[in-house]
Image 1 (cartoon, helix red, strand yellow):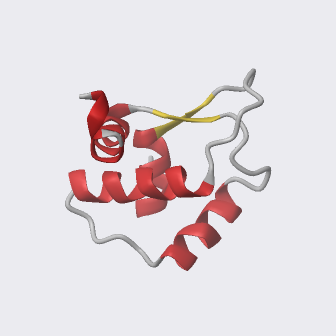
Image 2 (tube, helix red, strand yellow):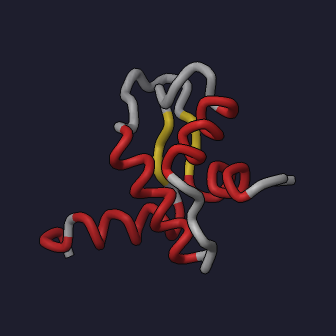
Length: 84
């Protein structure tokens, strides 16, 4: 069970691909969080608070993190409208 907004975000909008060497860059990862907040009608935390929370929850970094779910679709559509 998710205990905080950040835990819930990670649970609903990301998954870990252990076999992947790729990294979700900072802008995309934070953009995914903003899309998740928008879809879930949550007030986003400050960017500095977000990164502190991610550092605690993901001490090894973002290696292997992938987007998933409605927040991923929203992020992609709003960031790359030419794909639609």
